[in-house]
Length: 331
Image 1 (cartoon, rainbow, N blue to C red):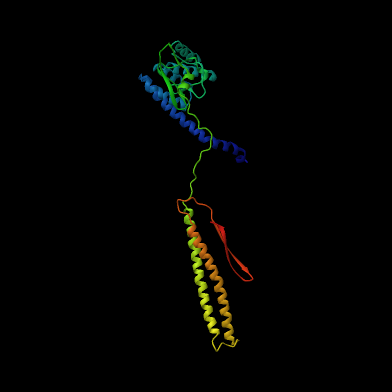
Image 2 (cartoon, rainbow, N blue to C red):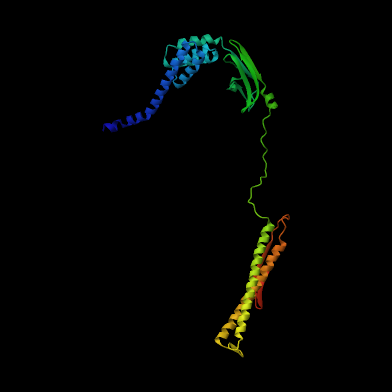
Protein backbone atom coordinates (compact mmCIF):
# COMPACT_ATOMS: atom_id res chain seq x y z
CA UNK A 1 0.00 0.00 0.00
CA UNK A 2 2.75 2.44 0.95
CA UNK A 3 4.64 1.65 -2.26
CA UNK A 4 1.58 2.37 -4.41
CA UNK A 5 0.93 5.59 -2.47
CA UNK A 6 4.42 6.99 -2.96
CA UNK A 7 5.11 5.50 -6.43
CA UNK A 8 4.23 8.74 -8.33
CA UNK A 9 6.60 10.73 -6.13
CA UNK A 10 9.36 8.19 -6.65
CA UNK A 11 8.78 8.30 -10.42
CA UNK A 12 9.06 12.11 -10.47
CA UNK A 13 12.22 11.90 -8.39
CA UNK A 14 13.78 9.48 -10.88
CA UNK A 15 12.93 11.79 -13.78
CA UNK A 16 14.27 14.86 -12.03
CA UNK A 17 17.47 13.25 -10.77
CA UNK A 18 19.51 13.65 -14.02
CA UNK A 19 18.56 17.34 -14.31
CA UNK A 20 19.46 17.92 -10.68
CA UNK A 21 22.81 16.22 -11.26
CA UNK A 22 23.52 18.36 -14.33
CA UNK A 23 22.55 21.52 -12.44
CA UNK A 24 24.88 20.51 -9.64
CA UNK A 25 27.72 19.92 -12.10
CA UNK A 26 27.15 23.32 -13.73
CA UNK A 27 27.06 25.07 -10.37
CA UNK A 28 30.30 23.40 -9.32
CA UNK A 29 32.05 24.36 -12.56
CA UNK A 30 30.68 27.90 -12.32
CA UNK A 31 31.95 28.23 -8.77
CA UNK A 32 35.42 27.03 -9.77
CA UNK A 33 35.57 29.56 -12.60
CA UNK A 34 34.30 32.32 -10.33
CA UNK A 35 36.94 31.63 -7.68
CA UNK A 36 39.72 31.65 -10.28
CA UNK A 37 38.42 34.89 -11.81
CA UNK A 38 38.29 36.56 -8.40
CA UNK A 39 41.90 35.60 -7.80
CA UNK A 40 42.86 37.12 -11.15
CA UNK A 41 41.12 40.40 -10.32
CA UNK A 42 42.85 40.45 -6.96
CA UNK A 43 46.12 40.26 -8.89
CA UNK A 44 44.94 43.05 -11.20
CA UNK A 45 44.68 40.74 -14.22
CA UNK A 46 41.25 41.80 -15.45
CA UNK A 47 41.87 40.83 -19.09
CA UNK A 48 42.05 37.14 -18.15
CA UNK A 49 39.43 37.38 -15.43
CA UNK A 50 36.57 38.69 -17.63
CA UNK A 51 36.25 35.58 -19.86
CA UNK A 52 36.16 33.37 -16.75
CA UNK A 53 33.46 35.48 -15.11
CA UNK A 54 31.47 35.26 -18.36
CA UNK A 55 31.88 31.47 -18.58
CA UNK A 56 30.83 31.12 -14.95
CA UNK A 57 27.74 33.27 -15.50
CA UNK A 58 26.66 31.23 -18.54
CA UNK A 59 26.81 28.06 -16.43
CA UNK A 60 25.05 29.51 -13.40
CA UNK A 61 23.31 32.88 -13.75
CA UNK A 62 23.73 34.33 -10.29
CA UNK A 63 23.55 38.00 -9.33
CA UNK A 64 26.97 37.96 -7.66
CA UNK A 65 28.69 36.66 -10.80
CA UNK A 66 26.90 39.23 -12.98
CA UNK A 67 27.98 42.11 -10.72
CA UNK A 68 31.59 40.96 -10.87
CA UNK A 69 31.36 40.56 -14.66
CA UNK A 70 30.08 44.12 -15.08
CA UNK A 71 32.85 45.45 -12.83
CA UNK A 72 35.48 43.48 -14.76
CA UNK A 73 34.35 44.81 -18.14
CA UNK A 74 34.38 48.34 -16.75
CA UNK A 75 38.00 47.88 -15.69
CA UNK A 76 39.08 46.72 -19.19
CA UNK A 77 37.35 49.68 -20.86
CA UNK A 78 34.36 47.91 -22.35
CA UNK A 79 32.10 50.66 -21.11
CA UNK A 80 28.98 49.92 -23.16
CA UNK A 81 29.13 46.20 -22.32
CA UNK A 82 29.56 46.99 -18.62
CA UNK A 83 26.73 49.55 -18.72
CA UNK A 84 24.35 46.94 -20.20
CA UNK A 85 25.40 44.34 -17.60
CA UNK A 86 24.81 46.77 -14.72
CA UNK A 87 21.33 47.29 -16.13
CA UNK A 88 20.73 43.53 -16.27
CA UNK A 89 21.93 43.23 -12.67
CA UNK A 90 19.49 45.94 -11.60
CA UNK A 91 16.55 44.02 -13.09
CA UNK A 92 17.68 40.72 -11.55
CA UNK A 93 18.11 42.29 -8.10
CA UNK A 94 14.66 43.84 -8.29
CA UNK A 95 13.07 40.49 -9.14
CA UNK A 96 14.91 38.87 -6.26
CA UNK A 97 14.21 41.68 -3.81
CA UNK A 98 17.96 42.05 -3.34
CA UNK A 99 19.24 45.28 -1.76
CA UNK A 100 22.12 45.48 -4.26
CA UNK A 101 19.77 47.30 -6.65
CA UNK A 102 21.06 50.65 -5.39
CA UNK A 103 24.71 49.63 -5.80
CA UNK A 104 24.19 48.46 -9.39
CA UNK A 105 22.20 51.60 -10.24
CA UNK A 106 24.96 53.91 -9.04
CA UNK A 107 27.58 52.03 -11.02
CA UNK A 108 25.51 52.15 -14.20
CA UNK A 109 24.68 55.85 -13.84
CA UNK A 110 28.35 56.64 -13.39
CA UNK A 111 29.06 55.21 -16.84
CA UNK A 112 26.25 56.94 -18.73
CA UNK A 113 28.15 60.12 -19.51
CA UNK A 114 31.20 58.14 -20.65
CA UNK A 115 29.35 56.02 -23.22
CA UNK A 116 30.53 56.27 -26.84
CA UNK A 117 27.60 56.53 -29.26
CA UNK A 118 27.54 55.33 -32.86
CA UNK A 119 24.77 56.22 -35.30
CA UNK A 120 24.24 54.19 -38.46
CA UNK A 121 22.48 56.61 -40.79
CA UNK A 122 20.26 55.00 -43.42
CA UNK A 123 17.77 57.13 -45.38
CA UNK A 124 15.83 54.42 -47.16
CA UNK A 125 16.06 50.71 -46.36
CA UNK A 126 16.36 48.40 -49.37
CA UNK A 127 14.97 44.89 -49.42
CA UNK A 128 17.71 42.28 -49.54
CA UNK A 129 20.41 44.55 -48.04
CA UNK A 130 21.40 44.24 -44.37
CA UNK A 131 23.62 46.46 -42.23
CA UNK A 132 26.05 44.99 -39.71
CA UNK A 133 28.07 46.63 -36.94
CA UNK A 134 31.04 44.32 -36.62
CA UNK A 135 29.31 40.90 -36.52
CA UNK A 136 26.01 42.16 -35.11
CA UNK A 137 23.13 42.87 -37.45
CA UNK A 138 21.66 46.35 -37.06
CA UNK A 139 17.90 46.01 -37.28
CA UNK A 140 16.04 48.64 -39.35
CA UNK A 141 14.42 49.91 -36.16
CA UNK A 142 17.88 50.88 -34.89
CA UNK A 143 18.79 52.91 -37.99
CA UNK A 144 19.52 56.61 -37.33
CA UNK A 145 19.70 56.14 -33.54
CA UNK A 146 22.82 56.87 -31.42
CA UNK A 147 23.51 53.51 -29.78
CA UNK A 148 26.12 52.80 -27.08
CA UNK A 149 29.22 50.94 -28.27
CA UNK A 150 32.50 50.00 -26.65
CA UNK A 151 35.43 52.33 -27.34
CA UNK A 152 37.66 51.40 -30.25
CA UNK A 153 37.39 50.78 -33.97
CA UNK A 154 34.16 49.36 -35.38
CA UNK A 155 33.41 48.11 -38.89
CA UNK A 156 29.99 48.88 -40.33
CA UNK A 157 29.15 46.92 -43.48
CA UNK A 158 26.34 46.52 -45.99
CA UNK A 159 25.72 42.93 -47.00
CA UNK A 160 23.58 40.94 -49.33
CA UNK A 161 23.42 37.52 -47.78
CA UNK A 162 27.04 36.61 -47.03
CA UNK A 163 28.49 39.05 -49.57
CA UNK A 164 29.93 42.30 -48.17
CA UNK A 165 29.09 45.03 -50.70
CA UNK A 166 30.55 48.05 -48.89
CA UNK A 167 32.01 48.79 -45.47
CA UNK A 168 33.27 51.73 -43.45
CA UNK A 169 35.36 52.12 -40.30
CA UNK A 170 34.34 54.20 -37.29
CA UNK A 171 36.43 55.10 -34.23
CA UNK A 172 34.42 55.29 -31.02
CA UNK A 173 35.81 57.27 -28.08
CA UNK A 174 34.51 57.83 -24.54
CA UNK A 175 31.79 60.43 -24.31
CA UNK A 176 31.82 61.12 -28.07
CA UNK A 177 29.35 60.42 -30.85
CA UNK A 178 30.18 59.22 -34.34
CA UNK A 179 28.11 58.57 -37.45
CA UNK A 180 28.39 56.21 -40.39
CA UNK A 181 26.00 56.71 -43.29
CA UNK A 182 25.13 54.59 -46.31
CA UNK A 183 22.98 55.22 -49.37
CA UNK A 184 21.47 51.76 -49.75
CA UNK A 185 19.70 52.63 -53.03
CA UNK A 186 23.00 53.66 -54.62
CA UNK A 187 24.72 50.56 -53.28
CA UNK A 188 21.96 48.35 -54.68
CA UNK A 189 22.33 50.04 -58.09
CA UNK A 190 26.12 49.67 -57.99
CA UNK A 191 25.90 46.02 -56.96
CA UNK A 192 22.81 44.62 -58.70
CA UNK A 193 21.52 41.33 -57.44
CA UNK A 194 22.19 38.33 -59.70
CA UNK A 195 19.26 37.79 -62.03
CA UNK A 196 17.35 34.60 -61.65
CA UNK A 197 17.23 32.55 -64.88
CA UNK A 198 14.15 33.26 -66.96
CA UNK A 199 11.60 30.50 -67.02
CA UNK A 200 11.79 28.47 -70.18
CA UNK A 201 12.32 25.07 -71.60
CA UNK A 202 15.81 23.75 -71.39
CA UNK A 203 16.56 20.88 -73.68
CA UNK A 204 18.37 18.21 -71.79
CA UNK A 205 19.48 15.15 -73.66
CA UNK A 206 18.46 12.16 -71.64
CA UNK A 207 21.01 9.42 -71.36
CA UNK A 208 20.24 6.45 -73.54
CA UNK A 209 21.71 3.03 -73.74
CA UNK A 210 24.22 2.38 -76.44
CA UNK A 211 22.39 0.60 -79.15
CA UNK A 212 23.44 -0.40 -82.63
CA UNK A 213 22.39 1.77 -85.57
CA UNK A 214 19.24 0.80 -87.50
CA UNK A 215 21.30 -0.62 -90.35
CA UNK A 216 23.07 -2.99 -87.96
CA UNK A 217 19.79 -4.27 -86.53
CA UNK A 218 18.25 -4.77 -89.97
CA UNK A 219 21.30 -6.59 -91.26
CA UNK A 220 21.28 -8.86 -88.23
CA UNK A 221 17.64 -9.74 -88.85
CA UNK A 222 18.40 -10.26 -92.54
CA UNK A 223 21.18 -12.70 -91.80
CA UNK A 224 19.02 -14.62 -89.33
CA UNK A 225 16.01 -14.82 -91.67
CA UNK A 226 18.19 -15.68 -94.64
CA UNK A 227 20.01 -18.35 -92.64
CA UNK A 228 16.69 -19.94 -91.62
CA UNK A 229 15.63 -19.82 -95.28
CA UNK A 230 18.77 -21.57 -96.45
CA UNK A 231 18.32 -24.20 -93.74
CA UNK A 232 14.71 -24.67 -94.88
CA UNK A 233 15.86 -25.10 -98.48
CA UNK A 234 18.36 -27.75 -97.38
CA UNK A 235 15.66 -29.50 -95.34
CA UNK A 236 13.24 -29.39 -98.28
CA UNK A 237 15.89 -30.83 -100.56
CA UNK A 238 16.51 -33.59 -98.03
CA UNK A 239 12.82 -34.49 -97.97
CA UNK A 240 12.79 -34.44 -101.78
CA UNK A 241 15.69 -36.87 -101.97
CA UNK A 242 14.03 -39.09 -99.37
CA UNK A 243 10.82 -39.02 -101.43
CA UNK A 244 12.70 -40.15 -104.55
CA UNK A 245 14.34 -42.97 -102.60
CA UNK A 246 10.97 -44.16 -101.27
CA UNK A 247 9.37 -43.88 -104.69
CA UNK A 248 12.11 -45.98 -106.25
CA UNK A 249 11.65 -48.54 -103.49
CA UNK A 250 7.91 -48.66 -104.22
CA UNK A 251 8.61 -49.31 -107.91
CA UNK A 252 10.73 -52.34 -107.22
CA UNK A 253 9.29 -55.61 -108.77
CA UNK A 254 8.74 -57.14 -105.39
CA UNK A 255 6.79 -54.07 -104.20
CA UNK A 256 4.48 -53.01 -107.04
CA UNK A 257 3.63 -54.63 -110.41
CA UNK A 258 0.99 -53.19 -112.75
CA UNK A 259 -0.37 -50.94 -109.98
CA UNK A 260 -0.70 -53.87 -107.61
CA UNK A 261 1.49 -53.32 -104.58
CA UNK A 262 2.48 -55.36 -101.62
CA UNK A 263 1.86 -53.84 -98.17
CA UNK A 264 5.48 -52.70 -98.11
CA UNK A 265 5.10 -51.17 -101.53
CA UNK A 266 1.98 -49.28 -100.46
CA UNK A 267 3.79 -47.99 -97.39
CA UNK A 268 6.79 -46.87 -99.45
CA UNK A 269 4.53 -45.12 -101.96
CA UNK A 270 2.62 -43.27 -99.22
CA UNK A 271 5.85 -42.27 -97.49
CA UNK A 272 7.31 -41.02 -100.77
CA UNK A 273 4.19 -38.90 -101.36
CA UNK A 274 4.34 -37.45 -97.79
CA UNK A 275 8.04 -36.68 -98.10
CA UNK A 276 7.43 -34.99 -101.44
CA UNK A 277 4.69 -32.74 -99.97
CA UNK A 278 6.79 -31.84 -96.93
CA UNK A 279 9.82 -31.15 -99.08
CA UNK A 280 7.72 -28.97 -101.39
CA UNK A 281 6.30 -26.75 -98.61
CA UNK A 282 9.52 -26.55 -96.65
CA UNK A 283 11.36 -25.69 -99.84
CA UNK A 284 8.83 -22.96 -100.69
CA UNK A 285 9.22 -21.56 -97.17
CA UNK A 286 12.98 -21.65 -97.55
CA UNK A 287 12.76 -19.76 -100.83
CA UNK A 288 10.56 -17.09 -99.24
CA UNK A 289 12.69 -16.70 -96.11
CA UNK A 290 15.86 -16.58 -98.16
CA UNK A 291 14.32 -13.89 -100.35
CA UNK A 292 13.21 -11.88 -97.31
CA UNK A 293 16.67 -12.18 -95.74
CA UNK A 294 18.33 -11.06 -98.94
CA UNK A 295 15.92 -8.13 -99.21
CA UNK A 296 16.69 -7.01 -95.66
CA UNK A 297 20.41 -7.20 -96.32
CA UNK A 298 20.20 -5.32 -99.59
CA UNK A 299 17.94 -2.55 -98.26
CA UNK A 300 19.71 -2.00 -94.93
CA UNK A 301 20.78 1.70 -94.77
CA UNK A 302 24.38 2.58 -94.22
CA UNK A 303 25.44 4.06 -90.85
CA UNK A 304 25.41 7.64 -92.18
CA UNK A 305 21.91 7.39 -93.62
CA UNK A 306 18.90 8.46 -91.62
CA UNK A 307 17.09 5.48 -90.22
CA UNK A 308 13.56 4.98 -91.44
CA UNK A 309 10.93 2.49 -90.48
CA UNK A 310 10.87 -0.64 -92.60
CA UNK A 311 8.50 -3.50 -92.26
CA UNK A 312 8.49 -6.83 -94.10
CA UNK A 313 5.74 -9.39 -93.58
CA UNK A 314 5.73 -12.95 -94.98
CA UNK A 315 2.30 -14.65 -94.90
CA UNK A 316 1.52 -18.23 -95.98
CA UNK A 317 -1.45 -18.83 -98.30
CA UNK A 318 -3.32 -21.91 -99.45
CA UNK A 319 -5.60 -22.39 -102.41
CA UNK A 320 -7.31 -25.13 -104.44
CA UNK A 321 -4.37 -25.28 -106.80
CA UNK A 322 -1.53 -25.02 -104.29
CA UNK A 323 -0.02 -22.57 -101.81
CA UNK A 324 2.94 -20.40 -101.00
CA UNK A 325 4.12 -17.30 -99.05
CA UNK A 326 3.13 -13.72 -99.76
CA UNK A 327 5.71 -11.03 -98.96
CA UNK A 328 4.54 -7.46 -98.30
CA UNK A 329 5.74 -4.34 -96.51
CA UNK A 330 7.56 -1.05 -96.93
CA UNK A 331 11.25 -0.95 -97.74
